[in-house]
Image (cartoon, rainbow, N blue to C red; front, top):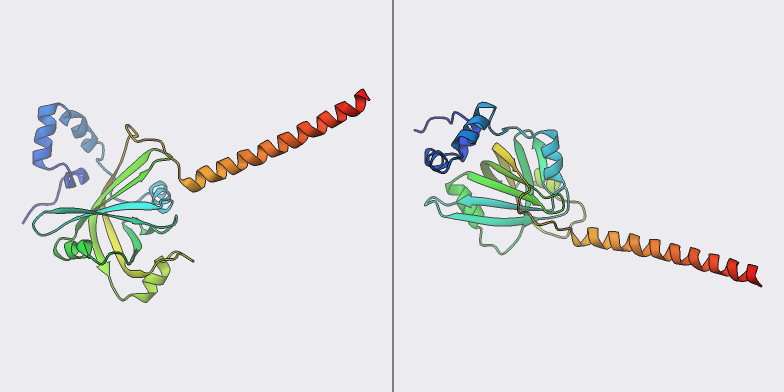
Length: 210
């Protein structure tokens, strides 16, 4: 039976990882981080706001043999729900019916969520455990986005063990198509207004010269 980790970041910083950090010169920095409190284990209000504003998430699992698998899940902003300071939940929509994630979680509850916001160049990593909930109509109704055209099949509950927010280095700056369309529409409306004002001023000038 393995002992409980001393630091929350031990969920990722195994003895082997720490050995490599030592060899490559980064262990002292991360050791200092551990002494200052390591990674957070509870969902803060700022993190909850970030999570619930996302329209995309990657869920990683591994089967009983350790083979990893990553699945993308998306929906309108708010499809990810923060139920409390340790729990994230979302309706799992029907897809290609491979059920790899569900099978992996049945054998190995350890899971990982990766969230990235290209517009703000932020990414959040969350380690924990996940489970699939089937047949809970009340919970499904609570989590299902309103008027969203998808068929909910089950619910995934993710229990946070630790999380870390990375620096924005190497994250490309991108915006969602809807955001770009809104900006362009606002620009076009402003151009129309300015053109109309310019025409009005020209007409006034033409009248004065006559």
